[in-house]
Amino acid sequence: MSSRESTAVKTEDLSGSKLVSQSDLKELANCSTSALLLAARVLMNPLIPHEPTSKQARFLTLSERECFYGGAAGGGKSEALLMGALMYADTPGYNAIIFRRTYADLALPGALMDRAWEWLAGTDAKWDERDKTWAFQSGATLTFGYLATENDKFRYQSADFQFIAFDELTQFTETQYTYLFGRLRRLVTSKIPVRVRAASNPGGLGHEWVKQRYIIEGPKKGRPFIPARLEDNPYLDQEDYELSLAELDPVTRAQLRYGDWEITAAGSKFHREWFEIVDQAPNEGEYCRYWDLAATEPKKPGDDPDYTVGALLCLHDGIWYVCDIKRDRLTPGGVKKLVRQTAELDRQDHPGVRVAMEQEPGASGKSEIDRYRREVLVGFDFRGRRVSGDKELRANPVSAAAEAGNVKLVRGLWINDFLDELVLFPQGAHDDQVDATSGAFSELAGPRLAKGGTIRKRSK
Image 1 (spheres, helix red, strand yellow):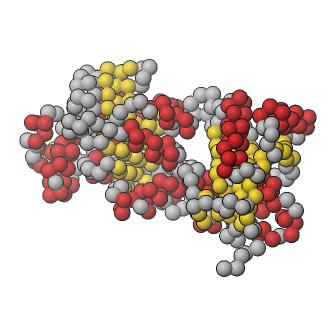
Image 2: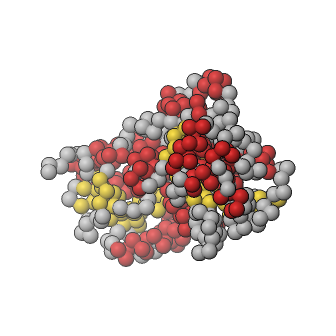
Image 3: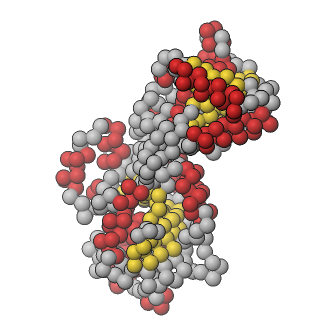
């Protein structure tokens, strides 16, 4: 659609839509001319064969830089993002990208790439299999990307996009999401709006940060949230899908059927509100960095191996401070480099810092600790630590101290991922951060644990 054509669009030109009601059109027309023009870019777009639902239309006509859609399953989230991506495909210089956490998520039957093929295969758009990109006659592009690991975000550091979308946002980390804002830009002469759009159900490892960003802070921060439920999608067989959702556990069913952001599948060991966030830990405290090692990189998209985690804790006057978490998936060589580099940085800030590491049972575990002592951490106060008992038992002292208000977190980008894992423990997919924190806690506490002083509620 040319700019000349778009400015001539009237409300009556859009009234043929069966799913966007007359009241919706009236609301759009009364709100602003720009909203009406945005609606036209969807309803009169030859690349979009489906008419938007009422909720999708509201989402697509928002002018804010950042918006969030969905909540319940079946509300047409993925389709809304694809529509949004195609709105400016007729405009030279326009580049859009849609992310899922893994490539497998993109390629599933009925998922985003499959649906894009249904919509675009009969058009003049050309598909590049290597780059997973549709190129349009205007020169605009639509790319499909994934962020399976934290470092995958750097694959896009030299790209420019005017539309960035995240499908199932709660599967991403907050740092993956916010990093991509650095790729959102346009030329000074461009009239294309820059937009970040996201959609998701509640639940998943990113539940808490997404809830905080959109449900709690959204209205004040100018980040609109358009909730949509199964009833808002007339394309779906609602009665049949209702039967499928009825088979789920109560927590998942409430999240997917009703878009319930309050209910979570939290464990019983930790609660988010137990942890006060502070700006720094005391310099005079005792410091220990404890490592829980894993030496596995994801072998293919969709793999979810354990992380190598190093937790830096400080103990001062009966209070534990979690100062920093290093967390990555690396090769054995990469793990050793990370451990060494982190030890050097820790020692610059805290000269008396100790380094400890979980020692696996048997001769192989002892040999691994010896190798680290001789090859990686020469000159550092380092020891291996044999552990006993299951993970929950080892986490009990940390849980008790946290409940008593004696564990604080030093402000940093790692906190959301850390708390997400803790509140799901032991039901969550990963427990590496819990293990590393428990190890550092025990290493610093030593015989104090036997006295019970670490879990006593401090008087104010």
